[in-house]
Image (cartoon, rainbow, N blue to C red; front, side, top):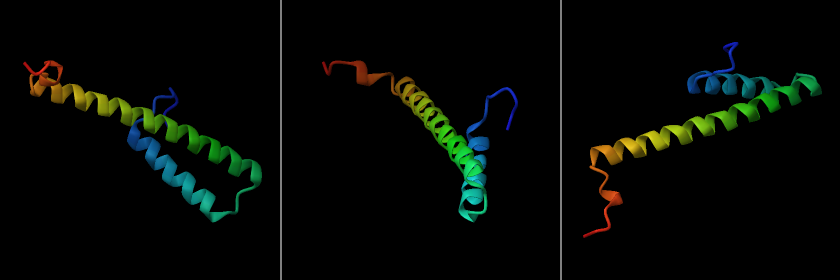
Length: 75
């Protein structure tokens, strides 16, 4: 992971895959498992936010391509 705290979607999902593999092995001590779970939960939240932002970008692009017809009142 990057030191500045800014992680790409791809980096976050790769780390989530790694966390899942580590937890599925089941050989980590409880405190390590809890730390991994917490890290995974934060990554999931961040991924959700990145997906929401991407969705809003796509919506805005669609509006600009379509001439923002959705804002017309149908006259």
